[in-house]
Image: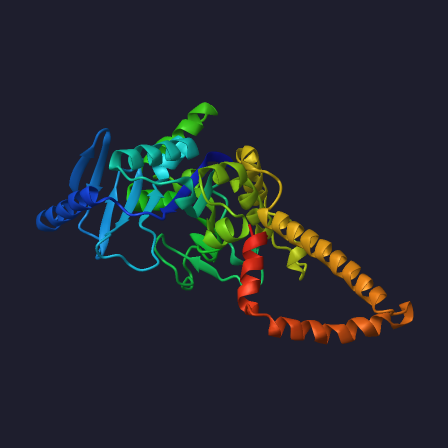
Length: 383
């Protein structure tokens, strides 16, 4: 049986900005938060075409949002900052990403930052999380813990409800699997139909039925699970992958390399069809997972550069070390020649001369720590 793809696209995107809000904005947010506390409802501030809903949440800052198609905004209070936390966080909503994609998210971000009067430069941006999801109409599928093949030591959770995180109880229908950690790399396979019904997010039904209409099929009837079962496969990447491994920082980095990050992630996790073979590595890949990989590869093919920044860094570092080693070798040969050392005594000369070099380092007026620090700053081979 073939699954129908009802939707594919980014489902989450979070940026942090290493800057503070200006005093004038801080006063507006502070007053609006107090009003929200007193009235037990959001206080809406108008910034041109942008409407910002300020809630009464945020013990030492301000929590706001720009609607279901916008983003959740977290502003630190400059007068009561939490040390080492970013001044601003923008967490884009799923419906906005589903309808506007990356272009819509970036446009909304820049429009809001201009409207709020917050100055910033691209080097202050940090991407903290990115999620990509594909929705399949596949009533015959039911998640099976044994089907999920993940890297060693990866935590896998099997659950029965939208908000459950514990292992399922006996006899319950499996509604999802989750493996990995959000800060690093996480895969989630879950019953999106059940979530839509429980949370009343019927906007997803509209998106799915648009896809059904384009393909010439009848609308989905959520009352009939046997014909409306929608499974979502979602890959979530956190800062350890996006920033540490793939060197992603700002919007340009996302556009150029996010495809590489997701393609790499799907190559490290897979969902298989169990067989009697005890070696799980030989199990055939599940048809739904092959389709998921194909969709990500096609959707994000223009967001790939094909080379990991970390690979380039390692290559540059190795090349520089080889260059310096060659120079050291040449200097030792010259030093040995001046000292009248013959070829058969060269190895012993090098070993003995190392002690003399160590003494020179100890006698140098500048400490070794300071000299190493200056050398690292001069080459900056870590990117």
